[in-house]
Amino acid sequence: MEEIELYKKFSKNMGYGNDRLRIWGEGNYGNIEGSGGEVSVAQVIGMRDVIKEINPKNILEIGFNRGASSLCWLLFSQANVISIDIDGSLSSGEYLKNCFWHRFTFYRINSLFLPSIFSLFNRKFDFAFIDGEHDTMHVRNDILQCLHLNIKYLLLDDYNNTAHSKHIKEAIKTFSHNYKIIKEIEICQGQALLELVN
Image 1 (spheres, rainbow, N blue to C red):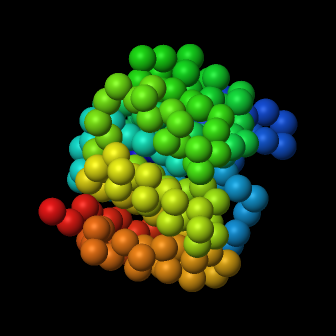
Image 2: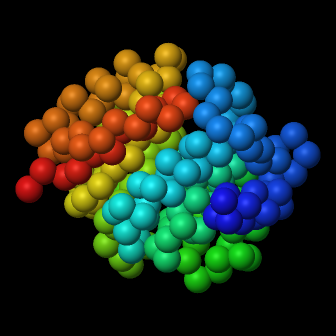
């Protein structure tokens, strides 16, 4: 698949040493949990399919880590991506900025302080990817910030992860009157796609 080969080509240059972005073997790797920042081919395809279905123009990503998901958004769409992370890989951020300079911005900031940089966003986001801290408080905060920004679609990662699922589902339930789950994606650790209720 041509798109996956393109993803692999770009990802080889992201991170450094033990921080290098890696792709698990071909296909879905089930419930194997590697260190953060690793993706399977199935995950890349799943994220590509979501992005093609929604076709966003501006993406807010909460949780950059090594940049695996940012690379998906940038390769498989024409969207502008603003990514935030309290401790994401600066080398991956610089690489993506160099490759996609006009479409990618990375801020090293805790998502709890996201409102302090709202004024820097001179665009309306139509999609957000949430994969930062996974405790209930942080996930609730991330969804709340997306609600304040009136973001139509949210994709929450690790929806079925044994360590995080309970917290993510509790946070989603808190906002069930604002966002509805429109798709549960069973690839790897699972994802939930939410849509803003009008």
